[in-house]
Image 1 (cartoon, one colour):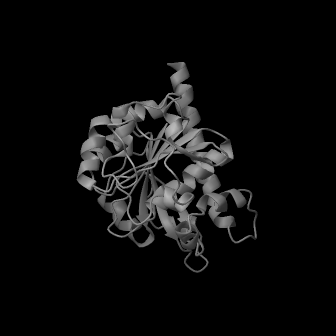
Image 2: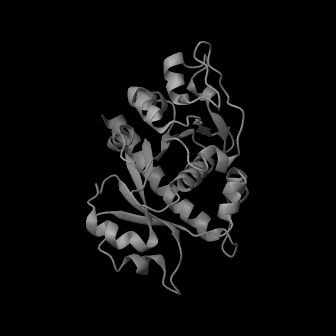
Image 3: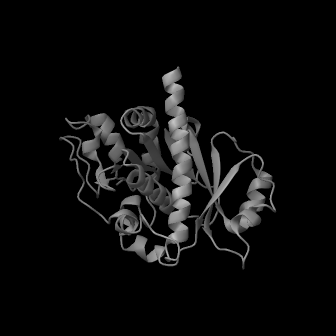
Length: 272
């Protein structure tokens, strides 16, 4: 199953953070092997930065194709062009969430070159990952590049990240594929005593599913420190009354939704 995270908003909507939160929580909760990568040159913080901090790359390519953190070349492109590690693509990943989340780091710093190279190998990369992992999570760039479009086309589920105060305009100005789209209200702040269900009841939401990730004051510092993985591990079983409960409760709902879709996809493949 392929799950993408994307946003068209002009302001930051936490796409990378939400991809990290949901993929890690899914892997740890269901004890399933999942893959995670970003289909863009990282901004201020990469998925790796916020989850565990910078680590040594797990796989060095044979000369003459060598890719390090200071090279301009795409790590994924190197995997496909130089050949996979002897024991499989998993050896090129940074593992976390009790070894169930396989993160494929991105080291390129050239936006144009990245998309040019990714466009050559994106279908092969997705095919390699989809046969090995229950779910493949992808953090997408806002700009509709060739590979962004291709990944959205192939995705089984797309989380469109939306700022809270732009939900109305997004719903009125865009049409969505109801079968594969879920709007994700990022950094949601409760208005006085109005719950989320009442908040979205003021909008026409018949054609799309909507969920949210609550604003969490401590999350920014946790991500900056590269400790999101340990934070999620520590709070996996957060209970009502704890500061993290609303965030963890939403992650439980969202990952349960993904699991249902994944199980349905698997059953469809079996029936075919």
